[in-house]
Length: 189
Image (cartoon, rainbow, N blue to C red):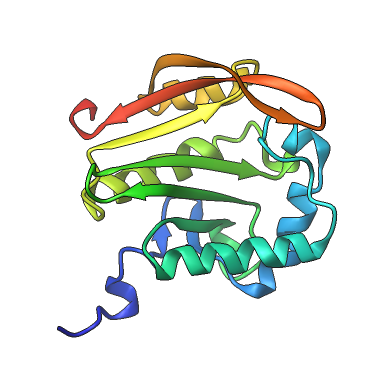
């Protein structure tokens, strides 16, 4: 069996939307990702503290590329279409992919300067369509801090339904937080 051509590989997609291009991350994206994920405001509701160094970003990219090779996850840089080869303004991912159950989790991170412009919704619709249509997923889940109203609203606009609350799910830097669980089925679309 021949390997798919890169443009046919559903784990290495390049997805264009009206204003964005979602593309695989490269080592050259480390500085841009560090600038985004070292920002305490961006990381306020994440399950990890702000990134301490650009090395953390480089390791993140290497780990995500290894997950792509194992077909365990897809992590894509969110780039403005006019600058598709330029630095990403954020990243989106389908991770914890379970082929037997045809499910995955979804996540997003966007630089603070790009908040409130509809980019998460635009990238989210494209990534969800890719997950259901190209990967054959049946279910996509999202886990967020219940205090993160902006993410809750974005998920609900994408069609996700809040399904439950996981109490005291995370402890980051001594702060304990709950997680709200959201789900979207292919049949919901």
